[in-house]
Length: 144
Image (cartoon, rainbow, N blue to C red; front, side, top):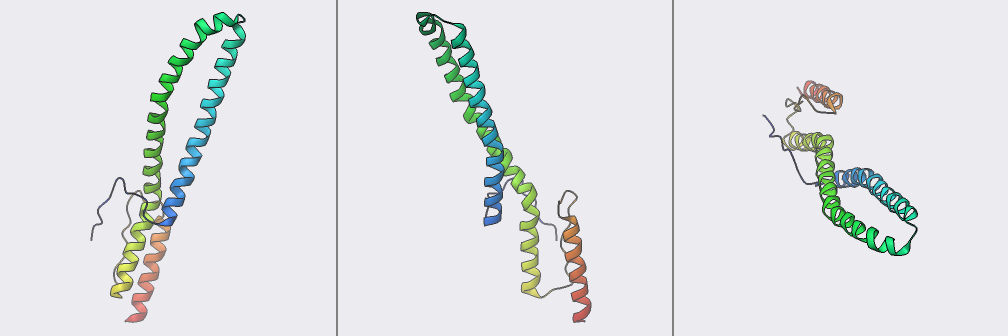
C-alpha cells in the first residue's frame, strides 16, 4: 500500500510542536539579533559622523524613517519565509516518524505481522524502519 506524501502538514503531536518551536527559535533569534545589531551600528556610525544637531534632524530622520518603512515590510516577509522553511523542515524530519506511528498502529490493530513498513528514498530513519521490519518478520515467524 502506497502512503500519500504530504508536502506540508501542521504539527499534530507534541514532539513535532516542540521540534518546530526549537527550529523557529534557532532561526529567528540569531536573525533578529543580527538585524538589531546592524541597525544599531549603522545609525550609531551615521550619528557620530554628523556632529551638528540640526543636520542630524534634517538629514538623519528622513533616512531613519525610510529605513524603518523597509524593515516594516521586509522583516515580516523574512520571518514568514523562515516560518515556512521551519515548518517544511519539521515535516521533512518528523513526517516519517508520523507515518511509522500510523503504520505500526494499523499493524497492531490488525495483528498483521506479515505487513512491512514503507521505506521511502529520502526517509531519514531508514535504519529504524529496517529494524522494525526485521522485528515484524521475527514476530511473524513466531506466530506461525
